[in-house]
Length: 566
Image (cartoon, rainbow, N blue to C red; front, top):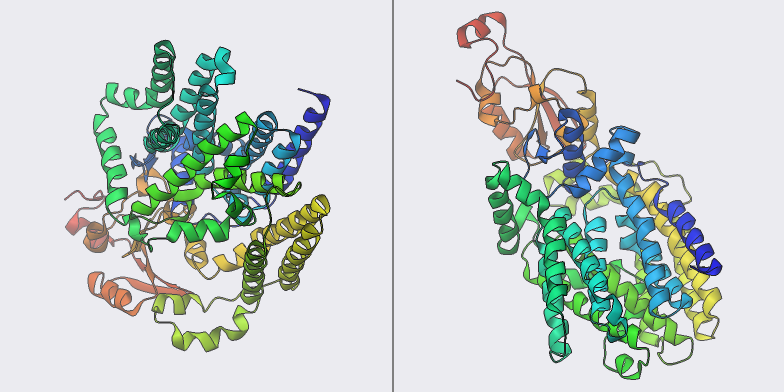
C-alpha cells in the first residue's frame, strides 16, 4: 500500500471512530431487535453456553450466533450495558468505510474511493445503523463482500486470481449465513442470476473453483448448522427454516407496510447518496463507461440493488433494515454520479437539487418540531385515536435549546452545496454538505433520540431497572417485549412467562405485571388477575403486583410450586 493510501486509511479509521463510537451507549436499547440480540448475548455470558442462542434461557431459533458472539465478547470487556451491545457495530462501521475506500481505489482511483466513503458515511440511515445493536450492519457487509469477490471472479483481467476470489466470495457469503441465515445465499444467488441474464449467459468457470467455493461455503456457513444436527438439535434447524418462510408469507410481528415502503425508506433515508444516485438509473452512464473494472462492479451493484429491493417489497413483513443492504449499491451509485459530475459527463440537475433541499428541509423541520412538541402536544391529543399514544404523550422532554439551530444549519448547508456545486466548486461544496449532515446526525443521536425514547418505552424500562436484584417475576401483559429480560438482569430462577400460572397460582415470589395504558387492557387485567395490586401509572404504562402467597395459602396450594407445574 502506498504511503498516500495508508495515510488516507488512517484518517478514515480515525474519523470513523469519531463518528460511530461517541454516543453509542447514550440511549437505552430499543425493543424488539436491539434488546433481543443483547439479551441473547447476556444469557451466553450468564450460562456459559456459547453454542445455543437463547432468549429467556430457552433456545432461540430465529438467528445464528455470529453477531451475538461478538456482542457477548464485547460485554465481557465492557460489561452488560448499551455501549457493549452496540460497540460491535461501531467497529464494523469503521471497517466498512475502510473496505469501501480500498475497493473504490482499486476499482477506479483514490478520488472515487473517497467519494464512496463520503456518500456512505454521511447518509442518514447508514450512520444511524452503525450506532445500533442490530445484526444487519455485519450481515450487509458480508453479503457485499461475497458479491464483490465474485464480481472479481468474473473479471477476465483477474484470471490468475480466480480460485482465491471464489474462496473469498464463499467465505464472506458463509459468514453472512452464520450471521443471519440462508437468506444470505438467496440474495447472492438471485444477484448472480440477474447478472448472468444481463451478461447474456457469457460466463466461464472452472470445476475446481466450483469445488473450492462449495467447500469454503459449507465450512463457513454450514458449520454451526451441522454442529446443531450432530448434537441432537435438528429441531432448532427446522424451527429456523419455518421462521424464514413465515417472514415471506406473513406480516411477522405486526410489521406490515404499503407496497413501495422500501422505495420511500431508501430515497428519504439514504440521502444525499440516493439523490445523486438518481442520475445512474438509466442506460446512458453505462454506455459511456470506459473503465472495465468500474463498469463490471456497476453491473453487479445494479443487480444486487434491484434483487434486494424487489425481494423485500414482495416480503409482507416490512421493517426498515430489511432493505439496508441497498445502502452499499446506492452509495456506490451516488459516488459514481458525483465522480463524473466533476467533468460534466453527468449533470446534477434541478430536480435533484430540489429533492436534496426538500429532504433536508423535512429533516430540519422535524428536529425543530420535536423540540417544540411539548408546547403544542395538548392541541394534538384530541386528534389522536390511540389511547396508548395519548398516555405516552404525558411524558416531557428536556432539550438543550440549540437543537433547532442544527436543523437550520442542515438546510443552509444543503442550499449552499447546491449553489456552490453548480458553480463548479465541488470539493468545497462537498465538505460543507458533509459537515452539515454529520452535525445534524450527531445531534439527532446525542440529543433527539434520548428525548424521543421518553415518549415510548422509558417508563417501562425504568420499572424493569428498579427490579434488578429482586427475586420476583416480571410479566408484560397483552404485549410482546424483550425489555423485561435485559433490564431486570433476569436470572434463570425468574424466567417464568406462563401468564396463566402467574395470574392464578400460589406464587413463591411476587409477580409484577406491566400493562399498556389502554382502558381495555387495564379492565382485562382486573378481570384476569383480580388480586393484582395497582402500583402506579406513568406515560404509557400501568404497573401492578401480585404478591407472594402467604403461609396459609402456600400450604394449601403447595409452597415452592414451580412455574407451570401442577
